[in-house]
Image (cartoon, rainbow over all chains, first blue to last red):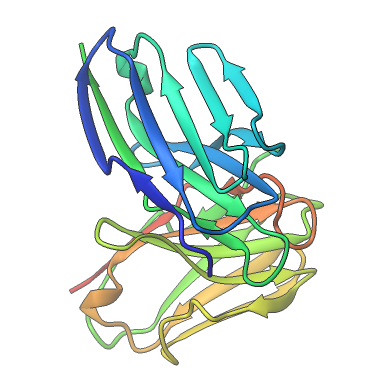
Length: 111
Length: 115
């Protein structure tokens, strides 16, 4: 199983602040997915990035896939309490046991 | 679409008892996944099926755990005998294509407490 490390593990910020969370691996992925999980629910897909260097925007969320397709970042602008949750990245590799989730970043946005 | 359905939503049992968790994937999906989530270990893949066939069960912690998928619309995860360290939230997820490289659709989870 490929290892995906997410940082930070926990993040507590005030409403309106910006933040970036990271998903890193020593392995190359064919694609990488970001999910958000709210308390009491299962994770829900936010975005999939496929091309090295790709940047995708989803309202105030900006996702970037590293040029070498080994890492990814999620940047949130002007965070809101509704952004609170657990953010998970999932790497999909070309070969071997390729289906793995990172450990997650638990975000709390205080009003 | 009703999404992935899991039952029960909560289960409290005593150590040594058998526990059966159930999952109905989204109709037409070809892959089904069982995950376990704890604060300490995060979201762990236990086993996944392609077209009802188990492909990778390397994440199943030990022989006390077993999973079946008798048809395309139903899967079970059984723990026998259960132990307190099995307490966790168990998620079932399905995806459209075999292999699970596309979007994973998760159920609401079953919160298991083993006393």
